Length: 289
Image 1: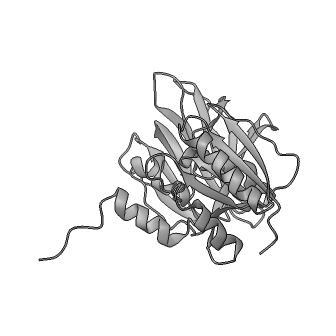
Image 2: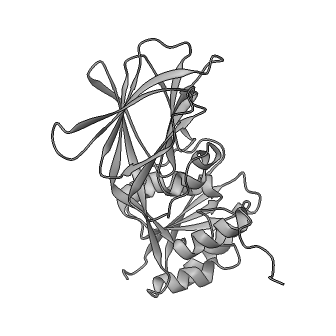
């Protein structure tokens, strides 16, 4: 375990106890001679750290972790996700146990969950106009009242020229979700729940016009290509993690592929995931007679 010298706190001010906890963490880490930088935000956040950090504390809910992951994962910085909202699938460390979890991790005991992330590229008339990343999902949906949109979806393997057409989707939209995101919007749209550390991606149509369209699970090493068809009755919008939006035009092509980095989440391993899953979905059941 590398020596911990610098820590970043990402503090969601929408959570009323976040500033108090941030001050407490700063004081406790100061006793360990760890330099702390606190970044607070309310609403839309913009952070581009110029210097490296050894660890990042996320103070908020799952949404704060999603933002922290997009910011810190490319730098290989582990994230300690402290939950200040309702019970979260990703933010699973309570405010009362952060110090214990941090000590266990810095001592090499607490597990790190390595989560698949996706990179999203938008191409328009042969030119790349937008790039983003996500930990949960990329969603292509209607932006107007007339919700039905038409998308062509294909999958490209690592073999040059190996292009597999999946088909046309006429639906309210399309969700491309990671295993981490399988418990979010995709689950609400009837998609499967995947183990958080599996290497796979969900393709899930939203309210498809035909009952033959069903969610699919494909290998993470394949690139998913989505083309917005020319004829649309509504505007079309791309959303990453529910936080980044990009308006799309007819004939735009969206490439979604496995990112070359992973989100490193401290103490959010598979056991924690299944514990939260049992609690949220009430799978625990009562005592047997």
